[in-house]
Length: 171
Image (cartoon, rainbow, N blue to C red; front, side):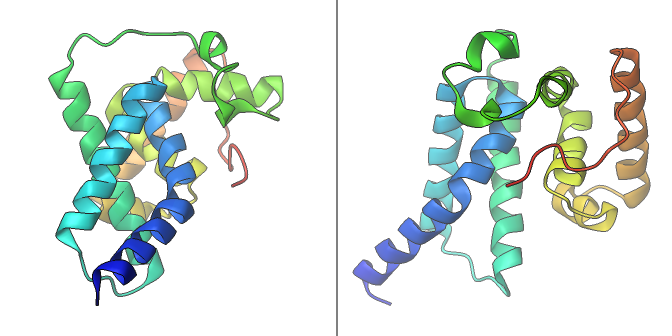
């Protein structure tokens, strides 16, 4: 494959997956600029590693896994990260456009979960992956995924938000 074909493929991948990855990373990092940095690192890794994928779903899973790992690295590096209420940033970010108040409250509550719980909630409820797929993506057991989902639902309920599951927003 020549350099031009590589660039075309990279552009297509970025165009296809950047919105989804932005939403996932934004829920984890809570800062638009930090998310852009993580996405840039994710796509640089994609470009330099040039992984071989069995399917488009495998490519998507790889990008999600890498972006979540980059988010974890970022959070680990910046132990003191600012907490900003969702309603303060939602005017400058398109992620909440068109959402009703209840959905925004759900997103805000998910936002406030710790990373381990948030990552399984995002993959299971928002991205629609099965327990097995989440287990594979995060390299944890299915029992761990189920337990984290249970703990997340309990915490969300304590936040005075009965979270019954289902997709939070349509892509």
